[in-house]
Length: 264
Image (cartoon, rainbow, N blue to C red; front, top):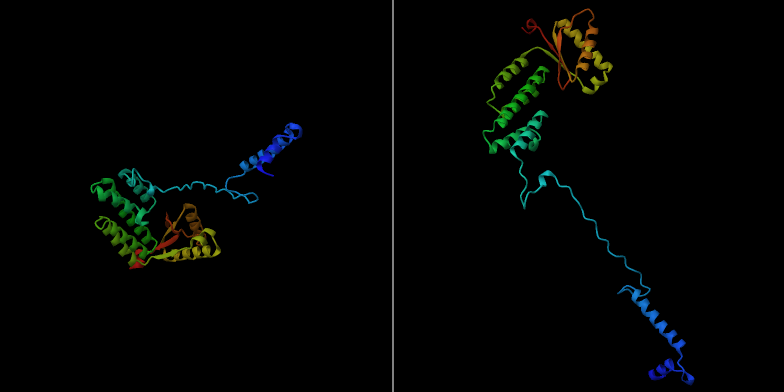
């Protein structure tokens, strides 16, 4: 059948009357096929599984540190002198004197002095660091920790070799090292547990203090612990009056100061 014959078939029937029902039926089939083809995604064939669309990744947010903060274009924010001095004083109060190297009181004060050599707060801060090391040297020598005391002295000299109090502490350390005083240190964990071994040792020290008529010095982290140590010693020599003093310090120790006659 030719295309012309098909056209006549679709538009005319026997007896010259149009066959509208068949014509509309065929046109509806063609139109429905067109709609189906339009509803399919472009580039995806029928029966082919649909490819998942790519998901856009969420933006990554990173919190930058203070040191990475930039002001303007390509310029890091500079710490002002007042902020640097405030930070240095905080480090001094926390005993961060020479360490950590980049976060110590000494490093911060020296940064200020590099740009402002006559800054009085920074100059006073350096003096305070040296003085603090001298105090630590005296505390160590009172507990008989002579090597530690010498280390603290060396650090004071490093900070300010011309500090006027260095000479006096040096003389005091030399005298302490020649003394016949007895020194006793304690393990912190055993002392906090107040074990029987600790109590027995305290009793032995009390007996030595009585025999030598020595003056005791108890150092402890808190007053309550120091008074407990003294109470154990006092009970060990009931009837004898122990003479001494209590001082607060980071470590627990006892020093028996021998009479001058015993030293001679």
